Amino acid sequence: MSTFDSKLFLQNVSQRPGVYRMMNADGDVLYVGKARNLKNRLTSYFVGKAQSAKTMAMVAQVANVEVTVTASETEALLLEYNLIKRHKPRYNVALRDDKSFPYLYLSTDHDYPRISFYRGGTRKLPGKLFGPYPNARATRETLLLLQKLFLLRPCTDSFFANRSRPCLQHQIKRCSGPCVQLISTESYRQDVDDAIKVLEGRGAELLDDLGQRMEQAAGELQFERAARLRDQIHGIKAIHSTQSVTRSAIQDIDAVALASNGGDHCVSIVFIRGGRNLGTTNFFPKAGLAEAGELLSGFLAQYYLGREAPGEILISQAVEDADLLQATLSQQMQRSVQIRHGVRGVRARWLEMARTNAELGLQMRRATEATTSDQLQGVGAVFRMAAPPQRIECFDISHTMGERTVASCVVFGPEGAIKADYRRFNIENIEPGDDYGAMRQALTRRYARIKKGEVPLPDLLLIDGGPGQLQEAIQVLREFEIDNVTLVGVSKGADRRAGQERLFLAHEDVPLILAPDSPALHLIQRIRDEAHRFAIAGHRLRRAKARRESILETVPGLGPRKRRDLLRQFGGLQGIARAGIDDLEKVHGISRKLAQSIYDTLHTGN
Image (tube, rainbow, N blue to C red; front, top):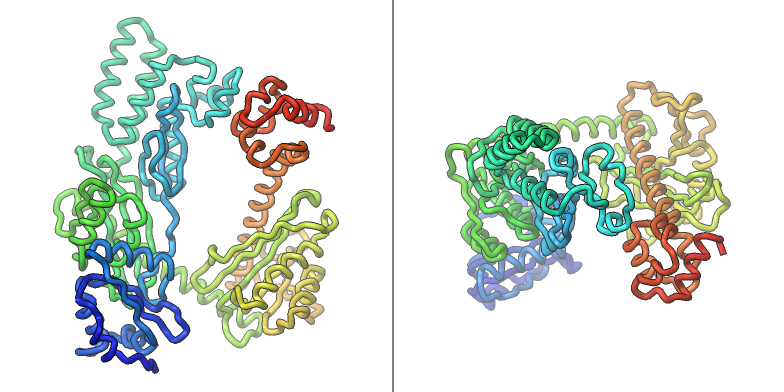
């Protein structure tokens, strides 16, 4: 039980706005909260009516409470957000998926603007950002559609600047060839403006304009241009026919709904931009101390204070401090942001769509967890473990004829893949193609950290390979004196078909072969395939980087910054190889002598 003297503490607490941090005896932050009146809020934890079971469990662990007084409630809200991000307290709402959403980026600092996929933190770019989109697939599909309709270039500026003939994108009719002046700047700018109208939801306005231009082109006997405008009209009409909402001039809106079932929660967001539905995405936050009604409030703060907010946020139920969050977001975005829950008409339909997606997402999540639970129980039974494994690690090796070997480690638990714990290892100082040595090096590096307590110890360790790789794992764990991990080698069958895997257990000579419909085998296959995918992806990245840069690294006096400038200027190693000494010398920091050295290295190997 806690020895925290709440009475003495409460006698000295300020009644001003601020943030409080509840901490346990080890100094770990249990909970971060904000308050309009710190004394009143903190008193509610220690004095008065009975709290929920979760709150009582937390209060029992409190050994200290730290308080920060702020000048205003808005300042307290922002400080609370930053402290939750920093400490990730156990009892706060935890928003696991915190990566930025993808956007489409249209540059404006070029005579021929480029349209491209963008994902990043900053929004201060010389151009226009459109989105966010719910996922990368939706973004790339929109990008492809715009390329087909308006033939906007997707290439980088350095690639664009070094073309002497059109690239493949022009040949397959996805670019108008501005790099070799196959289109005037005025015509290209018209295509850019038309694309912007589509992205901003002004398709109806554009259709009228395109119709007039098509008639004008036909009247001037420019039939090829008229045919292209006709195809654009058909394409834009096809876009509009797939939208499930009206084309009314409505500002950007997010519809946010919460569905709960016991201790499981799903928050679904429907993205509406310019009256168009861009899709949905689901989050499954951990509730911490919050009940379902409080969870949505915590989610909104953690989600929107870290990214760009739309003009309206529709929510499925009223939340505490909505006015404060609304004012803070408006100040942050330097424009009006409204948070509304009692809506009608088309907004009510969007909110109902979000609610339906949240309920379906929660059902699918619970079904997946139930399946994974059955599979884990099956794995525990097959390998005669005392209990179903709660943490599984799997290692795999990938290389091409021994080149640029990479080892992968993927981690699974009851919730599925734990991608934050995935790791890759660049393998060095082994004989090319020595898979046993690569496995030994990867396991040694991983389990040295586990031995130090930096990484949790798995219950089950899967090795992609047969008895040889398994023996390396046994030896590494023996060296670290780790003996409470179940070790299994997963080897493909004779013809390497799924369902014929042989499972080699430590200290057993005969491999175990499970039935093709075994739930345990399905989970093992899933984890093994994920390790294989992760290793191959890492190897390909490493190999591509080496082939792009390794020869430049041999040039004396050519450091990382100059190599980067060269690659950016000429669009890659091939562009550098085509350049002459005079061209190389024009790059900032490249002297005549160094340009000669680069040229000789690329053309003579010296």
